Image (cartoon, rainbow, N blue to C red; front, side, top):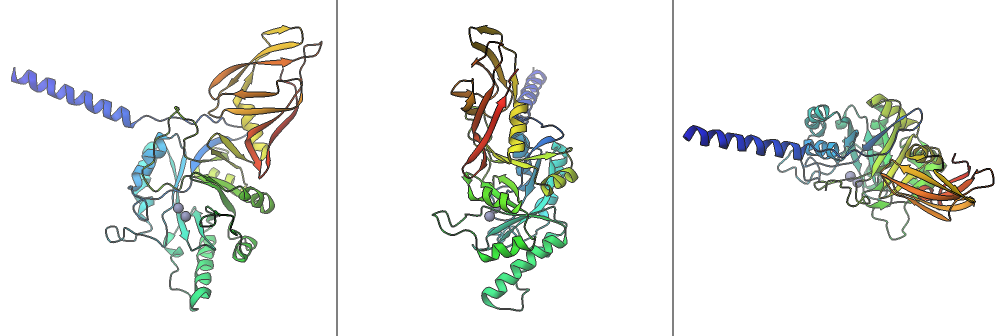
Length: 375
Ligand SMILES: [Zn+2]
Ligand SMILES: [Zn+2]
């Protein structure tokens, strides 16, 4: 009897363990399709751990990323700011080293990174694909004094990143300037003109900095949208599609770090933020086309065709008519099929023109599609 009780207890423990393991092992894939020629990688290039001002261990960032359906992450702890250093001494190498094994187990690509952290202006910058983070720790290395020393040490950091062939983007450009204050200063012109910074974080956490799109267009900067998470990450759920971390979509030849690097060098990114896609129209249009499966009309009555439109993506598309014979507005919900009534001519043909109001291509611009023949 004692053995049987023991066996039952062991079985119960095994079942409980199995439940616990499966609960921690649920990944919610992000349904944003590949586009012609490229695989669409889901990435977050900005997050913190206890090694700077975050509140979790580096491996937790990998677990969270895997659970949220990501392919690529960068842990980017502050070079200059470690409020926990009484307990965890400054060691710029460790977050990457600690997270790497877990990332490999999960099939997540880990980019070695750090956040250059300066008062505004010039602000904060993430350097990706670093080989030596210590080389960015330039505090006290200038022979100048005061503001001149600060600026020189900042430029030394960016040049040290460039010497390692790192990719640098400007983080949350409007941080500390969110009441209409000036964001762009002479120092920004200098670092962009010198080619020290090649990207811009238009979305950071819950904030979308619209002017970033204008600057990205003018200066050919790569767009990023990242979580900048410090606390534990709330898991993504399908109950509220608008609540998910911002994701940088990278259009890469394949899922390798080399391909990620080539893609960001070439500006092949877009941002998934709330129920919006933000980026260049060529990529947004390709995602829209890959998301929608339009069947031939299953019924035509007088001059109206009834058409099934399946949206396989996690984005609900919002359309407003600009021309053609379609309905004045249309909502195509995520992961669902909708029946749309479309006007047709006497040959049964339709032409459609729409703007897609949640696919954002510029400060006051969204994707437009004209003269589309749906079948
Ligand atoms: Zn920052
Ligand atoms: Zn940060």
